Length: 229
Image (cartoon, rainbow, N blue to C red; front, side):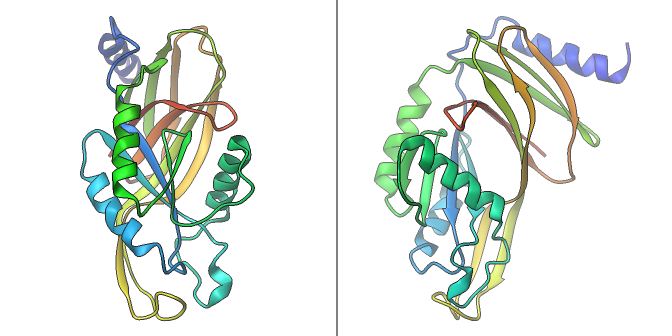
């Protein structure tokens, strides 16, 4: 048995008998910006969320505030597009910062910790449609998953930096030095899956930590998630 086969075997052993109601970490995507004066409290809240074992907290810096005097060095147009896609799917006309998307479906202001806590509790208790196991070996991630019923899913890999610090010199947050957690540097859809047969794939991954998300196609609910270092 070669190394890759052994990895898949280990994954399937981990999945065998897994209930699709298994506990899954709740994914929180914070859309934030260094040019937004309302964002630092939400960025601070992310430190607490990232420390939780039942949460995958991802900082998605957008670029649409760059024009007001400070270019966010972590801002990415792909993050902006993702946020706008979430808004379109939900029927919202506009986007804002700081906004948290929880579980791929619920929107909340990132400076409302009690509302965030309530939504985390809601998603933690919800039944998930997908059981997921992942392993990293060198420059590849092996992914195994089963679905309770057929559906259209996207498998998304999100690369992130655990911490990044910036001294902001201009704009609404001028003079502040802020440390951000789990700053997303890249993400991509690596597979489309219909859930009919078990999922088995191995994909290359960049150095550093990454989150693996299995999400309903069209930016729907995140049905399974895991992280690798």
